[in-house]
Length: 313
Image 1 (cartoon, helix red, strand yellow):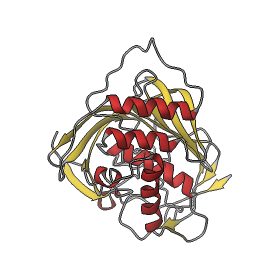
Image 2 (cartoon, helix red, strand yellow; image 1 turned 135 degrees about the vertical axis):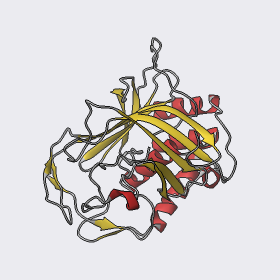
Image 3 (cartoon, helix red, strand yellow; image 1 turned 90 degrees about the vertical axis):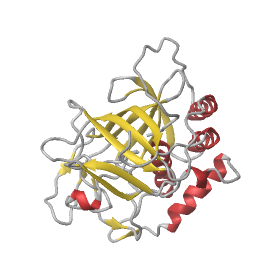
Image 4 (cartoon, helix red, strand yellow; image 1 turned 180 degrees about the vertical axis):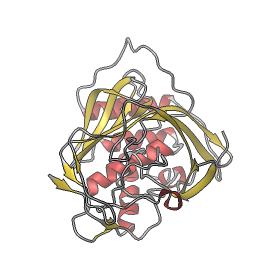
């Protein structure tokens, strides 16, 4: 049985566990949630999460994603084949080209936090979530109780950073890895997540919250296949019940899936689940056991588009 312990980092950005891992959970000013150890937070009562995690998703383009039949779904034999097919599809979807200072508006359906406030989400219910991410990747915003709140974004990279040459799988991953190393994460009582896991979570976060040019998206898809521990999972359902193929990473106690359409490899949604029992170790709240199989996030992308500022749709 694992134990969630306490870690901090000396940056103002969201927790690297990307809840969407999906996606770090709360604006500091709005959360007021007890903080667990190892940097993990319980699912937020106010619903703030990064669209990765939750945070954490793969935006293979912009525009409305609609449910449809999938009579010609492509079967993939390996994570390398999935990466190559998704990379080729990225070049076919040009999307919108943002200008500096603009934001990406994202609307998604998600399973909300369990009503009893326990760790994880209630997969029997659905809610719609909206957020905005600055094109430079440094800020994320959401409406909390009718008020637009903004804070730093993880990992703090944008399209311009990743589009610097060389735009290769090795090149984009090196930029992300350097950013993670510069964060100087520290642990008070236990080891940090491995760099491979942090790298997957950062890619997961970037591709879910940024309007990236096709060549960057293609490089990230190919780069995912080179991260040790990344695999693929077929027949994974998003929050709308659409089934796709996913890039997956299984950590010490959890697994996160980036779900793609099995026909055209556009983003569908995300899923996260615990893979073994763990005991929470909060600094200011009672501990409890989280059972293996507890859903951590479940989302589906409804719409994304470039806008001129946070709060615009």
